[in-house]
Length: 441
Ligand SMILES: Cc1cc2nc3c(=O)[nH]c(=O)nc-3n(C[C@H](O)[C@H](O)[C@H](O)COP(=O)(O)O)c2cc1C
Figure 1 (cartoon, helix red, strand yellow):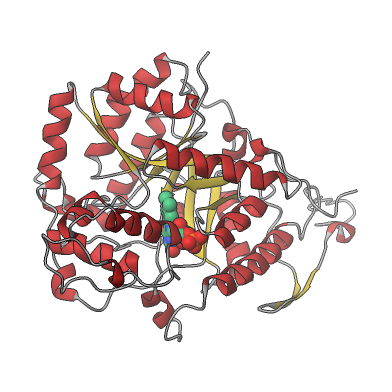
Figure 2 (cartoon, rainbow, N blue to C red):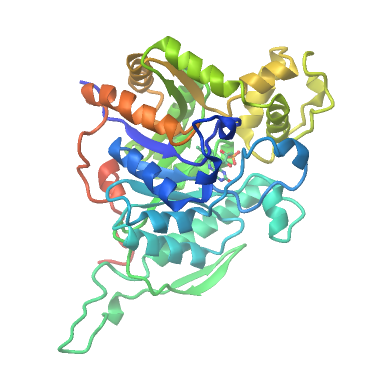
C-alpha cells in the first residue's frame, strides 16, 4: 500500500529557472496578469495539489543591476495576499498560501489579513512565517541591515503568539445574530489579547469572526537551529531542506523528533521536500528540455546567487579555479542551510563555475519519464525523507502543465495522489486538526 503524499506548488512567473523568461514558450508579461495566475492556480487544482504557494520579499535588489538585468530571479512582481484574494473566486478546493514577514509587518495586520483571507477562501488560507533573509528588505523599512537571526526569530515567536491569540478573539459561535433579542454577538464569547513582550505590546482584539479553519495553516521553512526549533513549535507545513535523499531524511528525522518536545504529535506537521521536476514522454525528451532551459541561465547570475547565499562577493574570482576556503565567512545570518550547502561544495574543491552550476538552494532535481519521476518520488517518501513535496515551478505555466498531465496520473495510479478533494478546507485535505479556541469551555 503506497502512502498518500501532500503536494504544494511554489508558483511564480516566469519561474525558478533563472533564464526561463527568455524561452520562446514563456511569456514574461504573465508575472502581473491575473488571468495567467488564475489559469496557473486552476492547473494546480486540476492536479489535486493541496497548496498553491506564493513566496515574497518586501524589497528589491538595488545593486548589481547590470548583472541582474539578465534575469528576474528573486523578483516578486506581485504581493502574495493581494494575489490570494484575487484567486479566491477562481479556485474552489486548493489551499492558497503566502509569505508575510514578522520582521516587517505588525501582528494585528497579519491577523486581520489572514483571518479575512480564510473567510474569503472558505478555509483555504495558509501563512508562511518568515523573518526575511536579506538586507534589501530591511532597508525598505528603515534599517541598515537585518537584525541577527536569533533576534528575528524571537520577534517571530512573539508575532505568532499574538496573531494566533487574535484569531481566538471570538469563539466560533460568538456571532449569534439573535434578531429577537437584539444580540448581534454574545459579549461573553469575546476575548481580549493582552501581550507585553520584548518586541510587541498589544491590548485588544480583531473584529473579524474566527476563521473557518480556526487558525489558517502555519507554514515555515527555517533550516538553522533556531529556525528548526521555531518550526517544531509552530509549523504545520514545513518546506524541508536537503539537496540529497540523505540530507532530506536527516532534516525530516530531526524535525519530527523536535516536534514531540513541544507536546505535539509528529503527524501534526507535514514536511514537504523541495523538488524540481523536468518530465518528458521519454528520459531523453526530458533531458533535452532541461538543457534548453539550462542554456539560458547566465553564469554571472549564478555566481551572484552563490555570492549572496554565501554572504560574500565572489565575482572577482576566476571561474575555472577552486574557490579558496579562506573566502568563506565565519558565519551566516541569512540562509544557514544554503550557506552550508555552498561551503560543502567549496570544500570538495569545486571551481566557481562548478559551484555556480551545482548549487541548488536545498532542492533536488528529477529529470525523466513520468514513470521515472514517480519512482523517484515514491522511493523518497517510502524511504522516510518527507510527507510530500514542494514542487518548485521552473517555468510557468509549461512546467506545471507537464507535471499535472504526465506525473499526476502516474502518482494517482499508485494511490499517492487523490482523485477528488475529500475535504472542504486546506486543513481537512491535509489531515491537520482544527485548533480549538483557547477560551472555549
Ligand atoms: C520553499 C521555500 C520557500 C521560502 N519562501 C520564502 C519567502 O517567501 N520569503 C522569505 O523571506 N524566505 C523564504 N524562505 C526562506 C526561509 O524562510 C528561511 O529564511 C530560510 O529557509 C533560512 O532558514 P533560517 O532562517 O533558519 O536559516 C523560503 C524557503 C524555502 C525552502
